[in-house]
Length: 547
Image 1 (cartoon, helix red, strand yellow):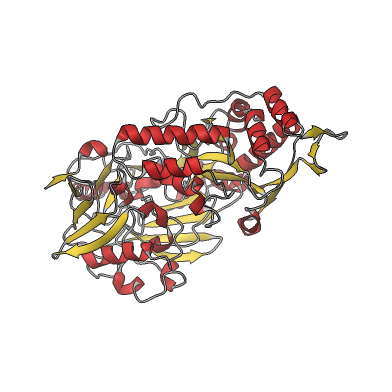
Image 2: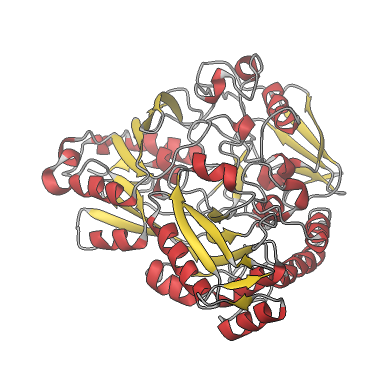
C-alpha cells in the first residue's frame, strides 16, 4: 500500500506557487508594468520596470545540476520534482503533487505534471528524471553532493508519466532531496557531464533562460516564454559579479545596481534611503575555522579544544556582525530543533591555557607556545574581498594570541586557498536548510575528506561517522535526535573546526517591485549559499513592477 506523503512535512495549497502566480498575472493583465520613479535619479530612474540588476559576491563554477548546481532548489533555470515555499515547505513543481510513499518508506512514486517543456520546446519526460538522478549517482560524475542521494537504490520510469525511486533504507528527508533540478537527456545525455558545454549553456524548464555569461563579470537571464507557470513579468535579470563588499555598496548607491547582498555594516549605511529597502534573512549559514588534522599544530586535539574555549563568539556577533547573527557552537543554530542543548560553551581562556599546558605546549619568550621545538603557529586564509570573514579571522587571531597561539591571517582567491586546505586553516562558510543530514554528512564524515570543499580538515572521528550513518538510516525521529545529539557532543570534545557565528543575511533592494498578491518582497530561511539563488529574489518569477 502507498500513502500520499503528509503535508505536515512542509506542504502547501494544492495549486503550486507557479500556477497561482500565472493565474494572478493573467487576472491583472500586467497593468502594473509601467515603471515607478527610481531612487536618486541615477541609472535606476531610467531603467525599464521589467529589468533588474542584482549585485552578488560570487558566481557558480557550473550551471549544471549534474555537478551540483541548484541542488537545494531556487534555480531560475531549472525545476525539481518538488520546490520549497516561503516557509521552506515542500510543494509540487515538475511533479503534479507530493509523492506517494510506501509504508516501509522504501518507495517514492512521483507523477509528472502534464504539458511541461524545456526551454528548447522539447517535452519533459520520466526519462529525463531517470537520466538526471542516474548521472548524479554515477561515480564518474564530479558531483560533490552525491552522498546526499546515497540512499537511492534505483530510479525508473513507470508508464508514461511516473517516476519511481527505490531506496536502500528508509531515509526520512528523501523527499526534500527531490528539489534537485531536472536536465534534458536529449541535450545533456550527448555530452560528458564533467566538461560538456551544458555546464555553461544549460537548458531547463525554469522561469528563465541564460542569455549571456561573462565569467567574473555577470550572468544575464531572460524570461522563458515557455515556462509552465507562466512567463515572468520581470523579463531581464542581470547578476553582476562583484566580489568586493565595498564596491558592491558603491554601485548600489550610484544606482548601477537595483539590489545587492551586503555585510551588516554596509547595509546599515542605507537605512535612511527611502527608495531602498533592507531585508534580513535568518539562516543556517555559519562561519567556522577549519583546523586540518594534517597540520602539526592544528592536528593536535588539545590545540583545537583550546582554540574552541578561547574564542569570544558573543563579541564577534556584536562587533563584526553588528548583532546580525548568533554564536555558533556547532553546525546547527542554537534555536534549531536538532540542536543538542548543553553543548553551548562559554569563552574560558584560563581553561584553554590549562589544556595547552597539560598537553606540553609551553609559553616561549615571544609569548607563543611551543612543543618539542615546534611553535604553536599556523596560517589562516580567508577569501579576499570578504570583509566579514576578514574581521572574523582577525578577531579569531586576537583571541588565539591571548592563549599563546599565533594565527597568521592571509587573504587569497579560492584558486590560491583550495590547494592549501588540507594543511592550512580556512575561514570557511557552510550551512544547509531542511534536515541536519544536509550538510553535516559532507562536512564531517571521514569518507568525504578531501572531496572538493567537503570535510576540509580531513576530520576523522569514528563516533561521529557512526552517528551520521545511524541518523540517515532510520525514520524514527527520537533515534535521529539521539544520533545528532551524540554527534554534537563529540564535536565539542574533539572539534575539527572552531565554529564562530551563524549569520543573518542582509539585502538592500530598490523598492520597485511587489509579489503576485501585491505584498512586499520577502525572504526564506537561507542556507550558506545566498545572494545568487536566495535573497528577496528567491521568487523572482513572482515579481511585478509596482505602478
